[in-house]
Image (cartoon, rainbow, N blue to C red):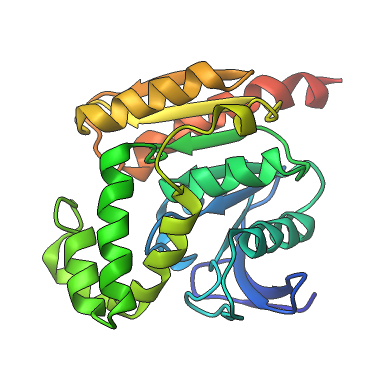
Length: 262
């Protein structure tokens, strides 16, 4: 796969998903492979602060999920196609790549592992399993179905901490909210599906996040066979990369360090 240098200090490349969709990614750092899976409205560029904080220990790969940034958007959409996209990126990142998913990116990561994707450890930040999130998603989907992208985006971001000055920059991604809504489903924790996830999992939430987000994180931890939970004091949905990065490094090092020592 050809790669070219980027202004962020890494390289940019493309990988082809199973259905022929071109998926753009960025890679930076050196070490064991780690793939970052963005949440709703996220892109590879948006993952640079966290990726940069981890690049001293890992070969970090962040990618544009389909329909975003430099990636294609082959229709019709299906969650299974997104799982295939992630599988292609993991294949490009390297054997045993760890995963870190933000928000619905974490839900997607778990779905992929449950479907049989072979990875290393998996970490998640506030996967939004909650009935109220799913209900709002249905309302957003209805607005998108009417072609009312701006209204859908406003509704989705109604309680968000995303600064108003940054919102115009994500307007072009509004249609992909339908994809995240599909990934989340009805908002319930899919216990039977997640019982098939045997990777080590770290579920993280913010101490200043809504109670529903923290309850969802704990409920998810209880269902996963090999999971533990961590709350970051003072953090919200928009977690600070410099706070999250050391927690991820510690979690991933638990398994990797003994092998390296040998």
